[in-house]
Image (tube, rainbow, N blue to C red; front, side):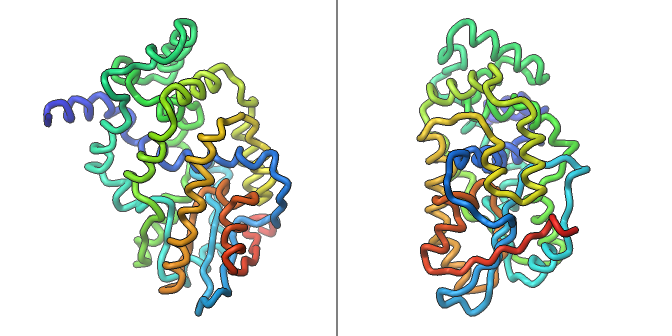
Length: 309
């Protein structure tokens, strides 16, 4: 068993640095869910949470998990809220997610069971398209074809290939918290995320992968996403992602997770002042975290952080 795991490690070694980005990547994808939403929120990525019996305010910040360095900024008004918080809470516990042994243990879970390969799930024509994408991405073939299509779609996304040249709000907030002795944790575990993803059938995952590779997503989508993020327009941010997604896909990546987070956030905020950082796609819409918290009786006040720099 150890030998097999070591073999997987060396096969995946060229992409190990991408694994943590992949885990965060799905939060960025999920903004597409609100393209048809009629709900409108203020132009703000940072929200103060108060009321409902809280003795002190907490904060909710919508991150973008990967952004070009020239577009990255951490304004003072954002850093000030983090500095006065007792704890930073991201989607994942970054201590565990960035641990090399945890990443190594995750690799087998990224593979399809029973020796299934992507070629078993798609037509011969689409399989050729996948092979060409793997080659273009510079990824090792063979074992890569056994990666679950949901993860393969992330690995083959051209923007993910630029991860080394980009900044991550999640990772940088995590490093700031560590440097300033701010406690930090996550809303969910890697194991919980993996289990949720597995609820999407391999066939549905494969269809999404092929749709992505056939270019059904609008060109320039990532550039539009960054522009919407910098303007703090949550509704435009949602609408800029034009790719269609299956209902189950949205439930897994977005709606279910939003609902699951609310009682966890409530318990944390009763104990201490918390700075929550989650993908900006989780904030907007009628089923977004902002509206769900308001439905529980909390007051959420928007605090624009970028537009007035």
